[in-house]
Each structure stands twice: as structure tokens, then as C-alpha cells.
Figure 1 (cartoon, rainbow, N blue to C red):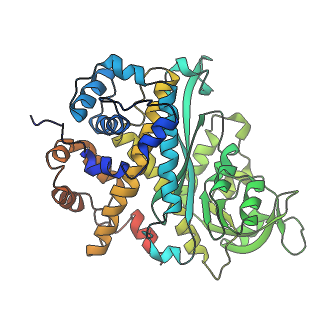
Figure 2 (cartoon, rainbow, N blue to C red):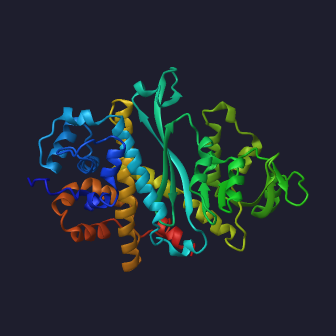
Length: 440
């Protein structure tokens, strides 16, 4: 078996990418290191962690072995445990902020050039949850189960730019901080000309108004129960009655009993099987407060969007197709959990959990921005094929031995990825890239 001493460019030279950032300065400023360490330096710590992600191991013993192989020293698990303290969390937080700042301030060429001609950036805002050991319920309170026992759930809020295929912001919180509370998080990175796409969980009228005040755009589903008024007379608008007569709708209205926010409203009928499934789920919702009315069930037969994008910029079909691109972030979450082990959080202290999650987010961001996007652009440029994110992450997970073996010859790895990780030809269902390119 080959030594990993010189294989710290594991995972396609991720270590080299990390060296672009002031790792040692951040480590000293946060107190993670006070003098030059011989064995567990910050760069070796992160490199070893990345290897652990791809091998699926997360015990201290395994971590100590990998750090030893990366650094060339024998390291005990006790030595590793001593480093996992609050200064390490602060260091990882600072490094993650630096990596995300790189995405914001040094703007790479857009993956989708045609979309950048219309919008500065297209932000997808969404969240995913990870269940933790119930002992951490005090720090990350979740919902209670049927027996009344408290559950610990960590929520990761994300802001992702579709045009550059890169992350711009993460926020960790307890499950009890819902998406409506996080709806204003987008404002810290939002600029004029940006577009925000979110699901119903983030629907807050005041937040939509603030997005508009920043001269940015939004597309959202309309939450049932929100008052709709005619834009010219401010008289109540009967949406369901109108849809029964017209079926398709694209008009200007005002929404909100107090806010009267001017928006463009688009309603597009969905197939009957889709509507039936929506109604079934609505009736079986565990939250009895959401017992759907007949009107609510009837409106589930349409996709109803509210937005502030003029029709001369995008028509109703393009809006619906663009909103469907929101599933990109869902696929990213799936890749995290299925192939990058983000849900395999150690059953340990809060500091251990935060260490694991922040290191994971650094790994994910660097992988996405500097590995996946590079390959993604390459395959589109060469032959117009599309690269599957899920297949690429699975490749890294399953072919770890090959990545180690050919770490010095990236071309061999790249050729295999570009050949085996393409989308399959499908006629009945379009893939993500086809959907985005169709908007050109």
C-alpha cells in the first residue's frame, strides 16, 4: 500500500486551493496556534479532514492516523482531541468567511453567460437540517416527537449563486429558527440587479419589499391567505374565481392587506396528477393549524408566482422554468448527505459538532468552486455535454483509491470524471443544465 505522506493533494489538489487563503494568519489570530506546530498544523488538519470526508470515517483514532500520514509524524488521538476546542471553531469560522469572501469579491467568469446578461447574480436561498444526538437538544432544539422527548436538530441556511454555481453565505442555527426568520439573511449580500428565488417557507412581505428597495428582483410562490388587490383600484381580487374563467394568468396586482406591495402575478395550471398529490399532502399535514379549506385545495391546481420582473424581460413560461432551477440547491443538499457524509456528525460535544460542520462547509465550498465548476465549464466548452453534480460527488466518494493513486496526474482523473459523470440522454425529463441553457 502506498504512503499518503506525499498525497496531501488528495481530492484533486484541494490542499493547493486552500493555500490561496491566509490559513496561518487566521489560525494565529483566532488562537488556534500560538507557535509553529510540527505535527498538527492548520493545513494538515484540513487536508486530513478532507480525506476523512471521502473515506467516511470520523473517529478520533482514524483522524490521528490520517494526520500522521499527511504530516509524516505519529500523532495520538489524545493530541487530536486537545486541538478540538473553541479556538478551532473560531479558526474554521474565519476561514469559511474568507473562502466565501473569495467567491463574492473575485468574481469568476459565469458558468451561464446568457443569464448574466439579464441578472447580476441569481441567488437560491434554502436550508437543510441534520439530526444530532438528543443530548445536544439544549443547544440545537428541534421539534418534539410523539412521546414529548426533545430532539436536537441543526439547520444550515445557504445562499447559492446559480450563475457562478458557487456559495455566498452559510448560517448555522437550531431548527426552531424557521425560514421566515432567515428571510432577511439575503439582504447582506444582495445588490442591485440580483435575483432571489426562494420557496414558500421564506415568504415574508416585508422581506420582499426590502429586496425591491435594493433594486433587486425576486420570484416566489404566493402563500395562501395573502390578500390580493387590483393594482389600479386596490379593490379585492378574487384569484380563484378569475382562474376558473381564464385558467392562465399574467397580471399586475398588489398583495398584503397592509403592505399593498405591487407585484406581477403569474398562474400556470399543473397536471391533474400533480394537483392531486399536492392536495393529498395538504390534507395529511401533521400541523392541524394548516387544515386546508376548499379554496386552498382548489388553488393547488396552479403554480402561482409573485415577482417584480417585467414581462418584456421574461415571459410566464420562462419564469416557471427559472423557478424550477431552485431544485439545484436541493440536489446539492442531496449530494452532501448521500456522498459527502455531512450528516455523519460525531456524537460528541457542541464544539466537536461545530468543528465538523464548519470544516465540512469549507470542504464543500472549495470543492464546488474550484473542482466541480472547473470540470463543469470544461465539458460544456469541449462538447456541450452536461456534468451531473450527484455523479461527480459519488465518483469522489467511491473512487477514493484512484484519486490517491493518481493524485499527481489530474488529467487521468479528469478524463474519467468527464466520461462517467455526464447526464444520461433523456427525452421525457430535462436535466438541470438543459433547463438553464433553455433560458438563453
